[in-house]
Amino acid sequence: MTSGLRNMFRCFSVHHSPSLFSRATPFSTPFNTIVHQPVILNVRRHHASVSNLGSIMGSQFDDSSRTEPFKVLILGGCYAGLSAALNLIDLSEGRAARQENGAIPAHDGKIPVDITIVDERDGYYHLIGSPLALANETYAAKAWVKYDDIPALKSPKIRQIIHGTAKKVDPASRRATVLETATQTERQLTYDYLVVGTGLRRVWPVVPQSLTKKEYLVEAGAHINSVQNASAGVVVVGGGAVGIEMATELKIMRPGTKVTLVHSRDKLLSSEDLPDECKDRAVELVREGGVELLLGSRLEGTAEVKRGDDRTVTEVSLNDGKKMDASVVIMAVSKPVPSTDFLPREALDEENLIKARPSMQFPVGVPNADCHFAAGDAIKWSGIKRCGGAMHMGYFVAHNIHEMILGKMHGVAPKFLELGEVPPMIGLAVGKKAISYSPAQGVCFGEDVMKAFFGDDIAFSICWNHMKLGQAHGLPKGSVIEG
Image (cartoon, rainbow, N blue to C red; front, side, top):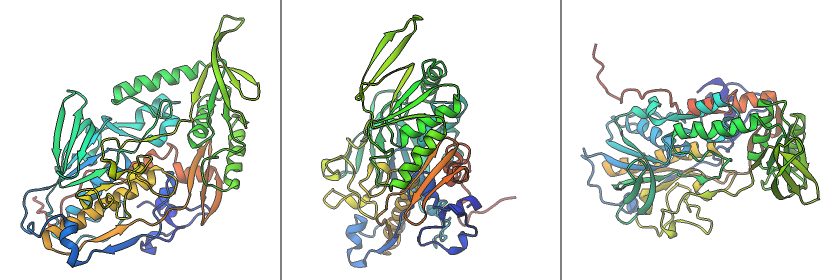
């Protein structure tokens, strides 16, 4: 763990060794807040009793000499899914999990695991970098890395990465139906453990809609070209985190372009349970960054009109009667939808979020619930949904699956990690500065906060390095080195 990440973890009471935290800064916050999601607070360890171990494991102890791999199917190849996969490989090979610097497992590192990852995209896309990816072509190319080009995914324990979409999951038979993108044919995949990290569906232009890097670069390039040539300016509608970041990143990239942020409420971040100080500071930084801000103004409609110089522009009408011209109007107000329609109804709440237990397992009542896990934005949990929490949850999933496998192989009761409640916390890039808020630290802001929270690439490198995506796996414990 780098010294920068040590600083980021300091301010919350989590069960890690104090030796990891050697330095502090005035705005030190946990890594997961830095990348827009709080670290999971109040970590609990749940020790399953030996008397009910059979039901928890899903079968009796008949796997002590198992050589056939445990099949783990992971739906979703972004923050939660990749975190679960890579941490599980570490643990199964007798190494400490990469994200937590925890204890080295006591076993011989020969746990057979066979992982399949399914994702609609053909690569890892750094979702929180979208505001910059849609304003800068160089960054756009960096933000999407094809799975074939990620060293950490070249482990022999990752059997396959399927470019496709989950269509149905049958927990009773432990079978998933997946539609392959290239062939448009359905495949039936069986599993011992399922991990759902499919997140939320967000509309354009909040995130790109392309499913391949090639198409994405065309999509992003067209958008970038449109804002480059926005002689009448750009209007961003919606003053949540996405709208704020899109408006301010665009202003940085195109300082000569008029950028207006329109929000229907009197304060920015109005839908988030954050203190007024945080919301007011966001207003100050947005205006300081050169973005024109209209609060309490609701979009009534848009119309394509011709102006005197024969230019076609979009006329934007607001509820207070004000009108303005724009070359581009960006809508950043839509509500994301959980990508969970392939799951049985009993696993979901009324908003189609997965009713995960603190152990990250599916709710009791779903067949084989203990063998089904979920992490990331698709689950119902407290706190603001962001990528850092998804990665942390992915680690919890990996730990708990590893514990279940040890129980099957050796008949020991699993020691689960469980999530506690998460209070509202946020890290927000606003132009050249950033704002952070946590109950322990309060509101912090400035260029130093931007550097610690996001680096110089909207946390791409922070996330990449945290999951160690650029590093191949080491040798399993006990491997013989020739030479």
